[in-house]
Image 1: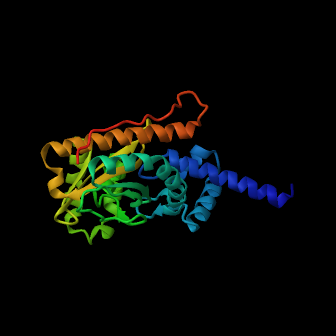
Image 2: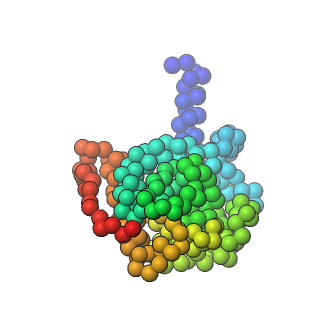
Image 3: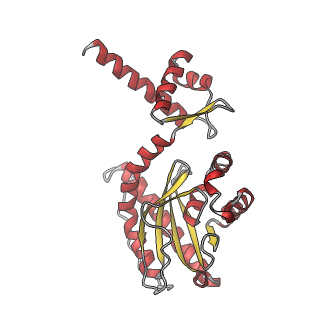
Length: 277
């Protein structure tokens, strides 16, 4: 291999070390000295690599606290690869939920500090709530699915997102910092996010996170309908159905990561649910 090629491969390997160190570091970011210590590379080398990675959006730098974090471009790449995988595995569950409830069901994933709708199924109820199209984005916390994606992150990550996406939330008057903190506390207490007419007054939605065994939020499932369809006992039933499908999806994602021949992988079960429409 030519000397230039060897140098390029070595640089890629070192850049990968830096990215892995950031991924394994603190949620609020890592300092240059922390990254150098984690990778075993010199500070000058790490600083040069971080600069190059920042130029392409794979790393971001907060000039106030002097910390580096994984950048939005890297999240976008991961979301693009993950989104198709998640959609394929989640689609049967979305169809079951839409058929069983009659309502509109959404699948959302995180892309940086935004939530992106990657799939949607509509039920048979004549009044449909189509507040999101596939591909639509919202700031994390805005709407039931986006709120579920944010509320079950670490306290440090929640605080960072609320601090940094304040401008993006200005078009959503019902989601100022104080209100968003309240909604997050309620979601963490209840185990699900509830958007009770905060975007469209007559429409409500509930959302639950899809969480893996390590506690990472992988996606969110949500159901939207006119407010009357979330009254009393039906709300409890809808939450239970969403949570069951979220557990199934988390299991399916884990098994897909293991591969079909790995220990612990098993065929997903198909259940017949009672119609709660």
